[in-house]
Amino acid sequence: MTVPATGSTNADLLALASAGTVDEGVWLRAEQQTAGRGRQGRPWQSPPGNLYASTIVRIGPEDPPAAGLALLAGVALEEAVRAALASPSGLRLKWPNDLLLDDAKLSGILLERGGTHVVVGIGVNVAHHPALADRATTSLHAAGATIDAATLFEDVATRFAMWLGEWRARGMAPVAARWAERAHPVGTMLRVRLPDGDELDGRFLGLDTGGALLLGLAEGTRHVIHAGDVFLV
Image (tube, rainbow, N blue to C red; front, side):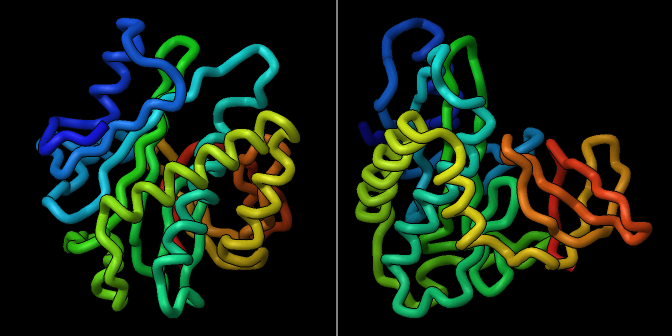
């Protein structure tokens, strides 16, 4: 379902799922958000023309760990965006939830859990991109694409459903493998800002079996990152 405007598509679906009025597979897309948010509660600028959409996944006892849904959503999103670009060579996934084009942020993904359901929110700079102090940003239209938010949404939803079925049937391995194909390569220098404010610099060593980031530090140790903001150095 699509609405002209709302506060946050994630917040709306969390409330509806908690009330038991919607179930898995429902998508909510808004033309505009007035209270959009990213990770760690950061505001997400949401002017008309960009993509703001959320869906629900019900986590069953036989499902892989829910944290892997962030990588799954990234894979589905990257495929849809790649199909929309005439020249997608600079398109890269960045752990944990960003899609970059020529090292500028194009999209973000936000997972929020309530009981047995996870709401997966996706925001894509289609027609506009904000000016941020700490990172470069871009949009699909700035890159020469002509796709609109509604058309991109349909492709994202289709690919998300396909990868969700793969995740349930075969586990995390095929999702992680595709994510690795489309991400910054092993050996890329990263700076990770941890939730407590500390920062670590190191080389990207890949992902562990649960989807956590493996960071190789200068002294030769390996650090497992489960949460944090990641910047290319």
